[in-house]
Length: 287
Image 1 (tube, rainbow, N blue to C red):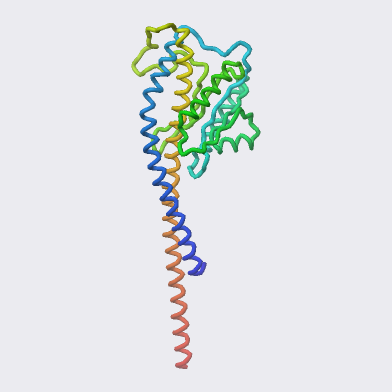
Image 2: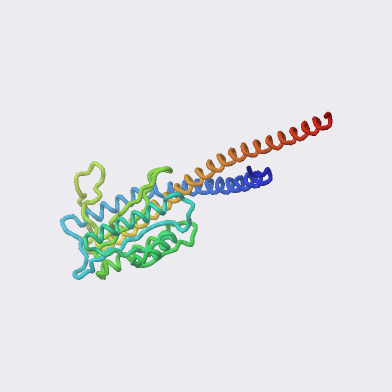
């Protein structure tokens, strides 16, 4: 059995860790509220822009340029830090599964890593990297980052380097539920995301012309889709970290309770030994 001093030292160490996990949980909860508000405000805009792009392409099929490589540009959005449970592991596993499916179709995937965890994994496995972005700002979902990724997607797709582009992120469902999601971005498929209750694409009166408006709408759609994926990922990361830190705090409380019980038993055993020594000494004097 460990000594009382060692047990007290372990209890103090666990209590210190518990304070850190509780603080991290509170910080993540505050960040989650802000991220969730931004996500809920963006969803209607992203869905409407997606429907508009699909409607403008109604009756025609958007395809990669002739001679485009049989390759896909997949942007994988993970976090820069850990301590968020299985958040990053689930995303990376989903990315590997999607990569295997693309290879089975004869399409070679190239990954653009957003977040240190994705970058470390793809470097370790030797996967084909198309680029990287380590987030050094407090917010993951920024218009600057979304714009740079969208511009890269459009440029590479239009130049024929890739015949399709997609993004992998964690869809935020609730504070306790996040789902890894693979979302194709380019080429845009007409009517792929119809509005709820609407049978088909909406017809728009276009001015000046469809041909002149389409490039602007496509660019706005790609930027919006990437920005929405970043918002989903940001909310999911904070939710996963909040849940993980709550679980860690509860585990620390259980460990403190077990160590306290062990300490009380050790102290009682020490008292019992001292009493036995006293009784033994007294009996020795009486004899």
